[in-house]
Length: 82
Image (cartoon, rainbow, N blue to C red):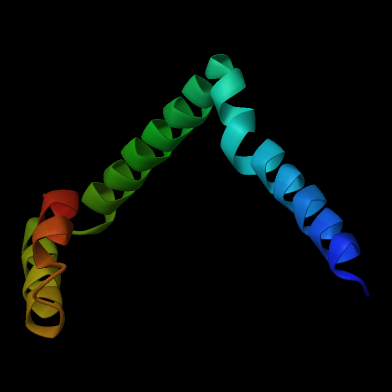
């Protein structure tokens, strides 16, 4: 395959990726807002399920286990659990 052909393939692929992920979201703010809202609602449902499933003691024990195994992630997880 000649270099110009390879470059043309790369350019087409880059355009496809930009339209799917990068530039596509910037042109449609309504779609971006809908995605953010869906993420927020999913997080709220997840938090509600965790609070219903785990007792306060179980949440504390889970937090301690996570802290012991992965102390760097424990701050983020603490915010999620509590």
